[in-house]
Image (cartoon, rainbow, N blue to C red):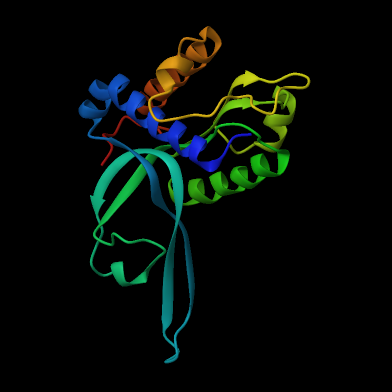
Length: 210
């Protein structure tokens, strides 16, 4: 049976691998890739005790974020919630929710709702959902994850499997997993899609982007 540490290790290995593979692309575009980082997800507004508008800017931690760092205006920093660093924002271009194994339909629908929240704030965001192993059919994944831009189930598990499968994931294990041609093919597809989405903004116009 897999644990949270397996998933955390998988995410960290993926970040290191993607950083190496995408290094020229990220450098050219001025982007960074970060693991377990909070992303601005909501803006709400209520009244303070003096009857004045009081905004709240909330953040949700995401597994992998490819984005651009930007200085946060001092005027809005006091209204940040659930975030430690108030001076810098990571404006996401691509967010990847990562699961190692054991994904149920409720999880897919929950993260699909989170994707919708983030995309309502960040207009040029693509949101991916990546599973190392899962049992869901493509039809179910597409229906339950309708707001994901891309879904990757590297290995589909069919039938009964040993409770010890997939194996525990320790730091550095990604190299071993890449020896599996199916996993390697899926991750190469991930790389190609990231490069394509970073090169093509969601809104194209003849005017240069600000």
